[in-house]
Amino acid sequence: MVHINSMLDRPEQRECVTLDFNKQVCPAAVTQTVNGGAKFYVVYDQFRYAIGDVIFGDRVVKGDCTFTCREVIEDVTSDNKEVLKIRTIDAGTGVSLLEFIETEPNSNKYVDLERTPLEINFSNKTLPTGFSVFYDVTTSTTTISIEQHLRNQYCIGKIIVGPNVVESTKCIERSISLWKRRDGKQVISVDTTSSNEVVESFYLIEQHAGMDDYTPYDPREGLDDIEIGSIEDELDFSLDSDSV
Picture 1 (cartoon, rainbow, N blue to C red):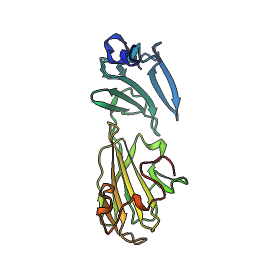
Picture 2: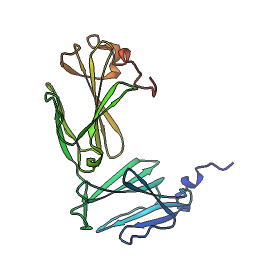
Picture 3: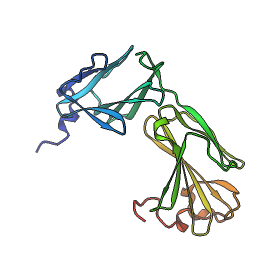
Picture 4: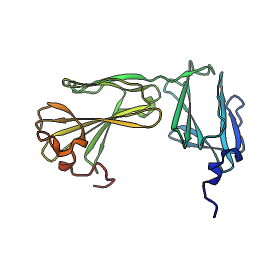
C-alpha cells in the first residue's frame, strides 16, 4: 500500500513552479480563487507541483519546493497599495508567513509589511476609529478586532485595562474577547497571532463582579487560585469545546 502523502514526503518528485506577478500570466499548474476581495494562488495538484520562486516588482522570494506546500495571497490596502503574502508550510519548521506592501500605489516597489499598532484603553467608553465589535450569541462573547479592510495596515497594539498593560508587539493579528461568568465576573482574553500562526493568549479577570478590578489570570492554574477560581468552572461553555 502506498502512503497517500508519499509524494509530499519526496518533494523532489514534484515540479517546482515559478509564480511571476510581473508577467501577469498565471502558470497552468496554479489556480486562482477570490475570497473577501483577496486572490489566493495555489497549485491545483499538490502531489505533482509546488510553488517555488515568487517574483513581484523588485522582489524575489526563493523557494526550492522542499517544503510541504506554499500559497500566495494578493490583496490591496484601503489606500490602494498592493499587498503580497507568501505562506509556506514545512513539515519540520511549521508555518512561515512573509508579507510585503507597495511603497506607493502602482509603484511596483515593495517593502516588508509593518502594521501600525492602535492603542485601546478600557477607561475610555468608546473605541477609536478602525475597530469592529462582534457579538457571538452562541457563546455570549464580544470580540474586538481591526476592521477587515484595515487589517493589512493596522493591528491592535497596547491594551490598557486599569493598572494592567498588555504591551504592543509585532504580529499579524490581535483580537480581544470579553465574556461574563455566571457569577458576573468579566473575563478579558487578548489573543495575539504571530507570523508562524502561533496564537498566544493573555487573560484578565475581575476580582469582584462589575468592579473593573482586573487582575492577570492563567486558566491553567484552575482551582489553585482560591480568590478568583477557575474561568471554566463558571462558564456557560467550555473553552475546549466548539459547542455550547
